[in-house]
Length: 238
Length: 238
Image 1 (cartoon, each protein chain N blue to C red):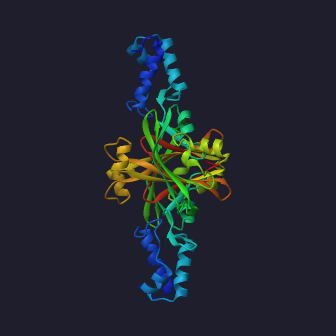
Image 2: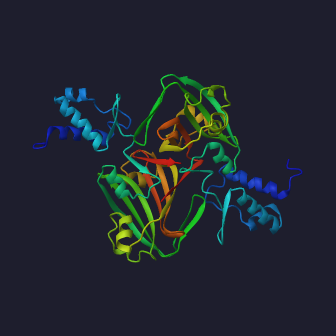
Image 3: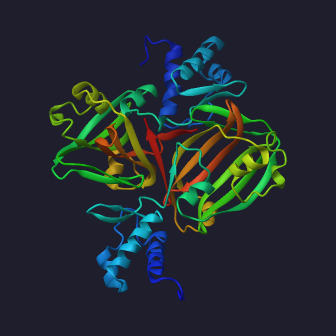
């Protein structure tokens, strides 16, 4: 029960739940002041406060003279900022969490062609596979290939948090550049679908990337799947 | 027949055709010097020239000690550069062309939410729908919403070329910024599939964008579909 919580707050939560669970989709109007008054029997001051709060929490945008609309996507990723999943989720108003699925040493290293260039990390490399959540919804499945030259004891660290924080705090490494290549794919591998609790294929982003700690010095490489129904990438060109 | 063309050139063309038509996929090895010698009965000088030529034309990358590999994607778009389709295609080694599908005046203007912001162009707006080709392959379907305040006689212009060039040359407009939002979608609308000569759905990028000619001054907005089997977006974060 909601005993003890202010009424405006529980109504806020109800509307936000509708957005989170896709009953109110991006671009759709959230209930108007008038509709909130009618439905929940609150004053217009409370109704206004509710809409303000939903907007403040980042779930909707108010457009003068038009109404309040659900934000364009559940999560937006600024493609031109070095921004880890953890911080990205916190900024978007979610609680991030991570499950480590597997980890192993690759003595031979790792290589990939990204944006037409061949990149390689000499072995041994530590490969981890992780599933990343926002408010317990699986959002992203990632493989990271980490240079053991720079992070020799990474296998003994907590690998269910932000790797960017770990690089920084445990190894004093500062990321200078991330190059990524985005593909649009159909997520139809039954094993991956099961991880995302999907019963049918959806479109998704495949992100292949390389992270540098100095010019031409690679710290890690990445191969991740971002579900297309939860993610948008934003890009600014000048 | 290939009468009159040098042998190395016709072999180049054959291999490039295999790449263009997806028989050789991004990341796959193109035939080695040795395989070219065996298959086409040429000297090792000619075989080397062929591989060099394919690389020079941008279809493959040679990796020391590993071989020559088909480039990661047919077309890559640097998401952080203001780069029109026409120039993008020329840089990628294709011949671009454009078919105007429809055009009309929208007296009420146009608006969209992009990267969580509401953008609007006051009417009248000129809306054009175009299909854009690379070497006669349909690559991208676009809707452009152009401010008639800045381009009053655009309806009388040639709309089957680069709009960026037109803005610049005919109206003296200089683009300052492009904000875009990338979604991963399933291209399954039968009408759109027919335009792309597709017999079954594929994944694709939906690109919604807004183009500025000064701070907060919108020249045009865009809503385009880039086929996912032909496109990658490259992003660099610093």
